[in-house]
Length: 404
Image 1 (cartoon, rainbow, N blue to C red):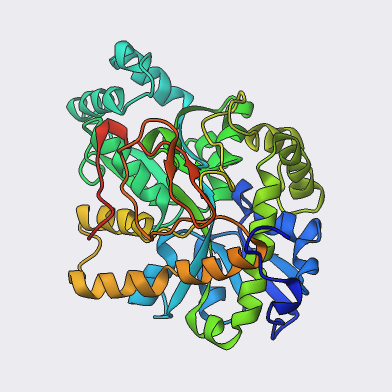
Image 2 (cartoon, one colour):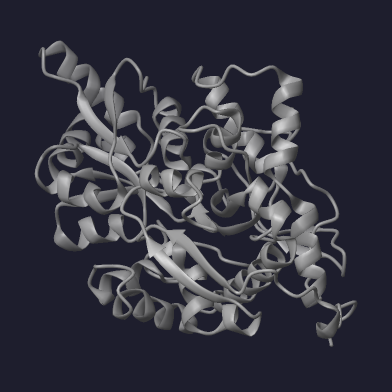
């Protein structure tokens, strides 16, 4: 037994043993797929069916209508649903982060060539900024050409605000200089190839797929925009969590064990095979395998961190950073006290700690942390000793205190 691990016979028995969980065809759904296919859900007394949705809007509707018990979600979706900004007002919460990083920005070959011609110096710098894109925007405006069209996958998404952050840092006004659309992840590479989009921000494997088809060029990964920033969460309706607390805790334990398993490079190869062979991703296994690669491998732009660096901890400050981005672009008009109450309701580190204690896992003792302070690994005090945290730099040297 691990230090301070709760004896297994003391774990509360799940109230439900049959669940349906939602996911999208993305690499960062791997914890759910692995938990089902490798038997982690079964170990915790759960018979889980995974329902693959084609869009975030479809998954949102299924969650709000009670057709799903829980789902892989974007970090802002529980907040937007609880505040009534998105669909039917439905309180939701998240007690576990599925992964850090995993997105990238890809542009068409034609736009890439235009950016190289407009500002070749900017295009050889790392990470690539939007400075060359700003030059292309100015040239097109002077020539009377239509605005370039970029896509993200959902209005209340990490992709939407990471794309805006990158554009603004390079001198592009996303509201004035571009046309922004919402396109479901499985369709973005196809629309880029058809010439309907000039660029997009999406999770893997849809960036690697465009590169492998030679229809697009990957410019920058989300770790270069927000290093080890939160990407996907596991979320449930608040009423469901209140009705079935032991079931929720068992799901969290199973997902935690799946995320630990996914930290190894060799396991990611097997996860890529599971995603394709079991029908969760309709993409060539070689593309998924390449895009699932771990840190320090040839596909660094969309790499996900599934467990190390306290990746699964639900930081209240992570959701606050996204909420601040919404405010920056005037997409959120909620008084500070009401927002603080909603953040406390939507992000539940207390529930995470219960599940982690069952397994004897380490976790942070605080609920918020600053961003933009560390360029490399650093140590954070944890329940069972120090935790090796990853860097947290923001593009352009930004800083975020984590507080409201």
